[in-house]
Image (cartoon, rainbow, N blue to C red; front, side):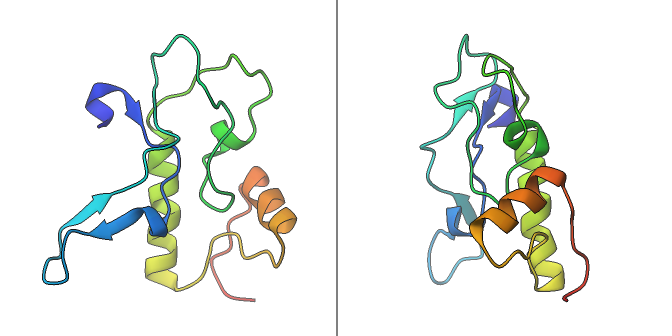
Length: 112
């Protein structure tokens, strides 16, 4: 996907599914916000799910700004954070708290 300059831009646990009940093969679902990084203009510039969005996406000011498929790697890192530590990296209690923590990239490494 990334070798073709495609970005998912909404990677989160809900969008990673197993191909079948008897398989460990994981596939990516829901390409509704996907975009090619070299597109002339992005349909949605600032997009994704708070708690999983890369800083270069969530903090964008100029709606003509471009970013790279590496934004998906930040989201993947946040998914691994949950898998390894059992807690969200941005454990706010409300949508706005999670959004603020995500914007600041204020990552939590221990439950509090």
